[in-house]
Length: 52
Image (cartoon, rainbow, N blue to C red; front, side):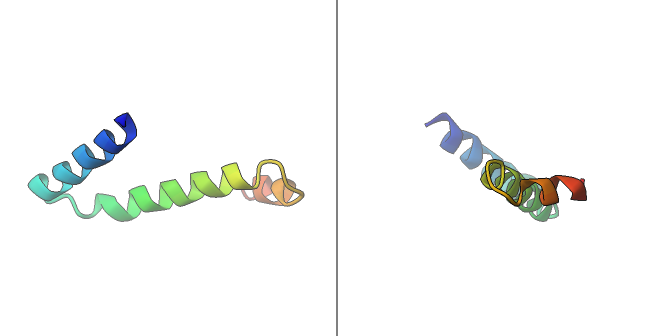
């Protein structure tokens, strides 16, 4: 429940403060984190880690 609260609070912050430019940065970071987590145990992991 706390995770949904944080996302709701962040959404309200974006709406009130008009900081829409933050949304692409957040989406990119979430996708990058998901990529690292999903490929952690696979054979692709060494190739992903060489990018960074």
